[in-house]
Figure (tube, rainbow, N blue to C red):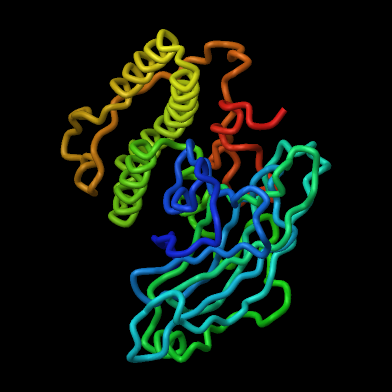
Length: 346
């Protein structure tokens, strides 16, 4: 079954020292992404490698809100059989291109999320960024990508041979198919979607994934009481986790501004939340399975209080689970929390 694939950045044409390309290797609410060097030459190229040949079924790209490439070209490649798998020596096949909106309609506040459906095999992915859209905020004519997400699975034997032969597969040289609203065949799990890791801190994201797997095992065993308890635990973690992400970004902004009193208060609030969501022993059930029978741990009750209007500087984070039941993902997403925390755009 297709799932989130781990990759590593192996090449970039240029980078802004404050926004290095290695930022694309991981996803979190405080991911700042990659930006090209100021007044760079176009096109700009980014290269990514996988640990083994893979079958690519979906690619997600989150663009910067005003440092926007006019077009992104996508390539997949591998080195011929018997040769060392090195990025600058492999053969690439062009899959197609994506056109990005100039974002003027949102006054350069929203970030465009592109989700494209693929059917290709390879060991490397190359993204070529063409000239930027000009606007009053992009003073240095840069392009930027906040995050990249790849969905797929291990390549079959036939797929591996195809990849090594440099065939790659895919829709050809035209525009690649853009899944409507971010959807795709079979609708990928919300846990693998790019927005999940951009809205939850890594610790909470790992706990949610662990409990989700435990819930699936409970459902398979037809232990619906345990499944319900695990579902409730996941729902509470999602609520608290989104708040934790916001607090983390406010704390980071306070440290940047050397406002250590505020940073200390935020840290204390985060510690309190972590204590409340810590996983411990659950209620004793007569003869019933406990959630840990399925690989999860019992979740303590958590009460999430709405403290009323938030401070004006507190970022807004969209929880991808709020309306996930069969709903299509938005093409234009609001800026991730770190953008609002640092006030990157007016």
